[in-house]
Amino acid sequence: MYDVIIIGQGPAGLSASLYTARGGLKTIIVGRESILAKSDMIENYCCSEPMSGRRLIEKGIQQAKKFNVDIVNGEVIDIKRSEDFEVITSDDTYKGKAVIIATGKSRKKINIEGIERFEGRGVHYCVTCDGFFYSGRRVGVLGFNDYAVHEVMEFQGISRHVTLYTNGKELELDTESSRYLQEKEIRINKNEIKELKGDRALEKLVFGDGDVEEIDGLFVAYGSASSVDFARKLGILLDGDNIKVDKNQSTNVEGVFAAGDCVGGIMQIATAVGQGAVAGQMAKTYVMGK
Image 1 (spheres, one colour):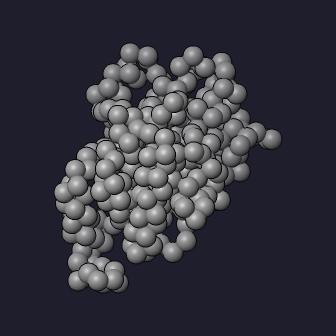
Image 2 (tube, helix red, strand yellow):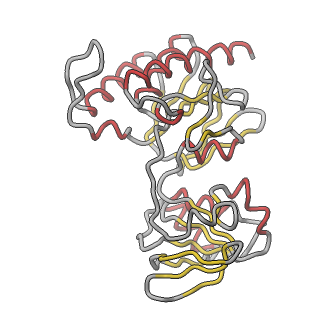
Image 3 (cartoon, helix red, strand yellow):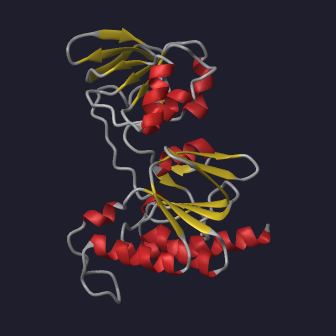
């Protein structure tokens, strides 16, 4: 059991970990490599010599490890709350008393005609939230990796008519996900989707090769789970594609904080580090108060 689980190993998450760990809280950072690592040169971060984004992240990780922060490189595919929080990766599950979301900004864009038109009317982004409404009906999950397979798993007990649509992508799965698809005989369609059609609600998928399939609901789990995906699962309020927080980086869900690009505003390292510091301090106050 951890005191604080931080999702995202960018500047916001690393900054937050320093405040929780130095405050005596057992802390873990879980997430993939930060997109900042792809930056060739950073020259506008105060009090630091110019360096690559990768070097800056490496220095942050080294500093966090000095204070005994556990760091796990893995894709977070789900987050759940009961008495405490459960952060689930494709390999393991981590339990914690508080969560800080610092995953950066979702940049995934799916170029399928009609996908935005049918949002809320057949197109959804959270099986936990909306899967119930499709009990026994024809549904699909749009994606190609472990996150998508996890959403397929969420349909167990809801509907047996589930198809995994990869939209032309090859599957990128770990052993457990591959085994699940085989054992449950999940139907997989790898054709590229050209268009979504329907009258008032989604009714059909039209593929690039001209094939058409009837469908009642399509759940998008394309690429890695984003801050918005986690927010939807926990009932966190959103402002567009930003997580809503107060001055303490607190969300409307007790014990969940957010910092960095995922909350909007100026997308700069300095902003992320400052927000991470606040989130770390407030998470520490919350856990110690419990």
